[in-house]
Length: 406
Ligand SMILES: Cc1ncc(COP(=O)(O)O)c(C=O)c1O
Image 1: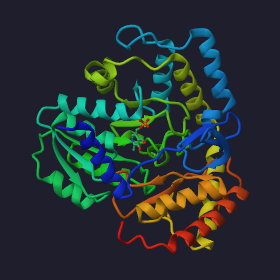
Image 2: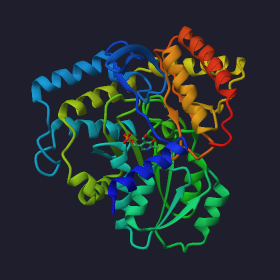
Image 3: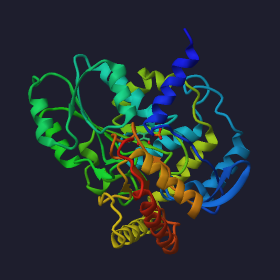
Image 4: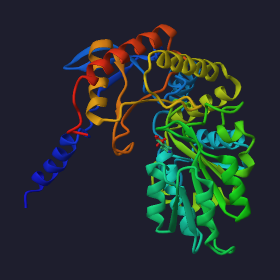
């Protein structure tokens, strides 16, 4: 058996389908976000980044940077071990208190990423609930799907945001069977909102636990930046809120917030929490500073929202097709993987705008897109230039015939 040939043919399959991913090498520049360098053939070129999930530029916020530097000077770099052994730093304890307070919950548990928070918490909770049935929105993130799979629990997938379908599924099960409903507050590829109010009502009626992924909403929505559930005054209707420190908070790490007892159960049984080195204290201090900063400052959120509106106005004027949702995410639809990559290449090579194409399996085949996330530091001139570049790139790409490839 030739192992290399097997892997080669898998890669060739992706290439033939236009699904092969090339990662551009980007070097970020402290203090100059969203400007960055694109590194190619050892040469650097200045580009504007439009696809970052550092939604508010907090990774370059001076107060956050100083907090990390000071923390490194005080405590060094590494955490020294797992939470269980020697990694339970005062920084991580402070961060968990800050996060619990942010979400008005009793307790929080920090993990090394949002992915790990979802996978570990979901698999652990489902394992602890004998005979449980889990109800999961069909558009839930890969980390949620992985947590459910790992648990082996009976699962019911409801149509995206479809309350009638969810209720029809949940009704089939007896009252005393444990049930968990898992969904997201913002679905990151379409930028639409989960129906927190409707789903919590169903959960209450059928005595189900609710688990809400607020990864794309924390820092961005609500008066304190704790997410959509806060904005709607529904934090108390959700049993477990999950978030990330890696997007709007500009650092890295993930967490859940919930009651003391649920957090204690997860902390005590989740292997993705127990058997891995804790996040470094400096990173955790920076995250804590960022959370605290965005609790008290909404300038970044306001500017971000203004720039999203400006971009949508420019795109509409030029008849560029995008999903007009109410969130901060602007998906410009291309609907073909090869065309999507070509447009992205034209934007980068000819106009210095960096937007990574989004292809399968991140989105379904035929719905490929450029996912634009305008930040507070993009200017109107940048938005206007991007729109002109997009129009030009679409015109070039539209002349090609992609039908055989798609
Ligand atoms: C909905 C959702 N949940 C969880 C995650 C994982 O979060 P993290 O990037 O912190 O691992 C992502 C990542 O993009 C996501 O989109």
